Length: 561
Image 1 (cartoon, rainbow, N blue to C red):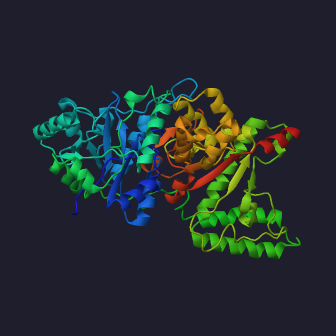
Image 2 (tube, rainbow, N blue to C red):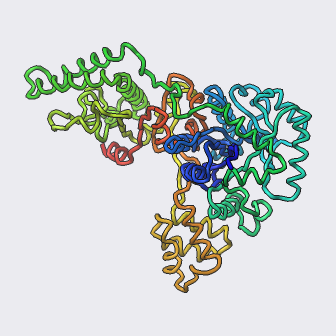
């Protein structure tokens, strides 16, 4: 029998050290279990949202977006995105939530992200609010009435969950009575943190790691059963047999959530829509062409033909603004280089950085200073870098000495505005050595033996931890007790993101506030900030990533000069 249940509360591994499934794993499990739609509501982040949207679109699952947001008093509410305005408001709320998380003097110790009810009131439009999970949600009438005033009766629901903990049925009955007094429906959710029971075991280990303790000591904080595993709509309807209206409300509410993250977010990079860009790029190239290839130069004619060909191609692809923006970055780097090097040093004779990679095959890059390699004399072919069939923006890598890059990145924020520029995120993932050390500690294994196993590991694949234990300890214990759990949990953890970090130099700039497209959070280094998406998600969103890379060898060469 078909059951109209939509899971509106689930977590991926981007709920760092809490969720245990990749977004695509959740999507595949949802399809296998008969779901037609699924909401991803990671803790205080949308880092996995684009991966989730792309995976869902590929298999025909309707992706619903949101986040479980922490309030300033430590309680949680679940926010779901209804439309484009709602996505922008969720991104702004998460930006606000993380704004103070690097206030510690070292900036390495993260504070807890949180927003107040006043922040929700400012950014409520386009969002639906659920009252939150069974353990940390809003359960008192005064706060619920405030949320009802903020979001309105069409966008506030009382959330019911059934984690099979003591008194949860009594809690749900009380919440249902409260919902009747408020005049709003209840909605059932599963609070899924894993797509398989195996990952539920890993979730217990992640709780211990997050709390810097062992599995034994963290028992009161752990879930105690597998009710948080994504299951079928029929199983969820049976779980909430006492609240059939709350089950039916999931589909009614889901039908109002029509935001599609794979559609145009309205991002544009500076110069992308400048009608003067084609002419400006042609003039910049022509001026430099006369210096590089004066009449009588052996390759003057060949270079002129190549320049005409590239400019026609760039104009046809609408990329003139793309090249001018990279040139502006390089000119900004020249200003920074003068400050760092001083105008009277030998280093002042050197360019501020170097282009690298396939972009050196472009004569336009050569003439605009983005490359120092003559593509004509070196007989470099353009097609790998730029052609009529490209489906994404070309990639130009710019290498800078580290002392210049250190000041250049904050200067980009100043030039384009902190609301319109940010670094790209990166997500360090679990590999063998890290998993052995952290999971081994959570399991309470002897520290010295854990370290012997970790140091002897090849450090990459999570599939060979049993061999690592056998080689390091040599007594077959990888097949027994907690050592066996170390082997199995390390395999499950392999490749899952552990925390949010900063890309080595990828920079996003925009003509409108980036916080309307994706949340922006402070980076560990002062003066820097980053979007919550990595380079792949930024590419899927259509963001232009400019690579401002620090090259240690370039610094060494300049010191030699």
